[in-house]
Amino acid sequence: MRTGIATICLSGTLEEKLAAAADAGFDGVELFEPDLIGSRLSPAEVRIRAAELGLSIDLYQPFRDFEGVPVDQLERNLRRAEAKFDVMEALGADTILVCSNVSDDAIDDDGLAAQQLHALAERAAARDIRVAYEALAWGRHINEYDRAWRVVHASDHQALGVCLDSFHILSRGTSLDAIAEIPADKLFFVQLADAPHLVMDVLQWSRHYRSFPGQGGFELADFTARVLEAGYAGPFSLEVFNDVFRQADPRRIAVDAMRSLLALAEFVPGADSGRLPPPAASHGYAFVELAVEPASVGETQRLLHAMGFAQTAQHRTKPVALWQHGDVRILLNAGAAAAPGVAAIAVESADPDHSARRAEGLLAPVLSRQRGPDEAELSSIAAPDGTSVFFCRSDAQPDTRGWLQDFDALAPTGREAPTGLSRIDHVALAQPFDYFDEAVLFYRSVLGLEPHESLELAAPDGLVRSRAVSAADGNLRLVLTVPVLARDAAQHAGLQHVAFACRDIFGAAQRMRERGIGPLSIPENYYDDLAARLDLEPAAIEAMRECGVLYDRARGGEFLHFYTPIVGDRLFFEVVERRGGYDGYGAANAPVRMTAQRVPETVTEAAFAHRRPRITPAEREGDGAYNHA
Ligand code: MG
Ligand code: MG
Image (cartoon, rainbow, N blue to C red; front, side, top):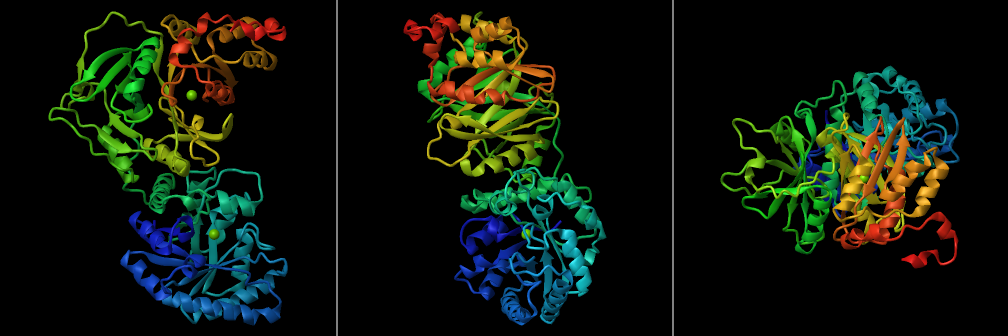
């Protein structure tokens, strides 16, 4: 399928936009008129520049408020069009986008609109130009694609066809059935945009919140499949107005855009997605690598130890230790320069090379890795947030060296004391503000994960957006977060955590406490509210209160979880127990957690937390209840 992108999607000058589109591999662009008007390049120079870059100019847009006007205005509008045709000839662009009239003065008369569009098509045909007519979702009278098609059909001119824009159609919930009625030779142009489901004015929705396919909530695979079935053979062009993309690096956004089309094609029957290998079967996390600066190494080790991990091996050439709790593996890299965090996630893949090829096919940057002579070859790529993603097989293979063989086993210390952790449940990664949507699409498409609903959570420092992506069988889960508004230092939105699954949350909390670290303390008010909200046994609530365990329930399942203190202002751990069909992440509790973290407890303070006298509700209501502490 031919690919295109509207210059409006990208930031920068026209030259920068064209270069970014070409670098990302697009076949063509839609030239947004204000980008030309603001450029020092003449239309002829733009044509040369685009040709040098291997880009065609597939569409010139937009031409507004043409049809359905009083008869005495037609001639003036046609003169306006002729001036555009002059520009298009110099550009070498053969299709103009005419969007439906939004003026309050537009006349509600499809016959008149058809007549006037016929006159426009006549002038265009004389210059070998085609007119693609698009129903804007907020058009004054013509705001549905099927009505635009009826007008085009009535107009009956070979130089006039329709432009279908997925946003205008899907935002209104219009049935897609009429697409099949439009002859292929009348489908002049197709624009693709996704968007989150929002209840707001459709014009504002369109101008600020469009996103690339796979980043919002629209059924774009169905839309694209129907357009292909109708015989459309032109470019699929992205037209995305998005406040964040407009301020981000155009080269990155162009790559993100191209990735969205590659990923979309995978779900569209009949679309050419031949070069993309399907995701290999993945079996959860092989390991998570934490990079920790020297000052935080001790605290991190202490936390891992309290959670029942033991250092079992040391990398032969790098300052990296392997910590294990059964089959749950954490690599602790003590060589970080800055705050501690997740440096890498490793996916257990049935075929690591295949997984890496798929990632490359989706334009993921492949990381070259410094490797000693006898060390295992590990395929890895860089995610948009800088996290490395490894693909590996931890079980021994006869012909290849496994990554575990790069580690020298240490003698058991005899201090191993399992706390019942069974696997890594999820990893939560804070994302750079400009690249949140990119990251969601990246992890989703590269790892073959399903996106969950986007949530907005109240942190004490501002709203945080959170979106999870997970494998259908739940063995691989990621939670991505970003502050809703850009800011210089969004400390608590920038936290990262690794969550471990267990089958006995209270036992895990108890054993961690016995090993010297209490869970993040949760306010009494939380448990009072829990008792008021849910029909839980008082003893169950008391047990949760005792262990700092939070609770959520959904879809007949339950979720119990607690958090550790924070290391180095950035990293913490979570222990979770999923019961029944619960598939979420305790988002309802995130505001309580983020507020509790606002007054940080260090690992050392937490070690003594259980010795603090617990304050009963009765005491709290009396005078001086807090004087205990
Ligand atoms: Mg459009
Ligand atoms: Mg979590």
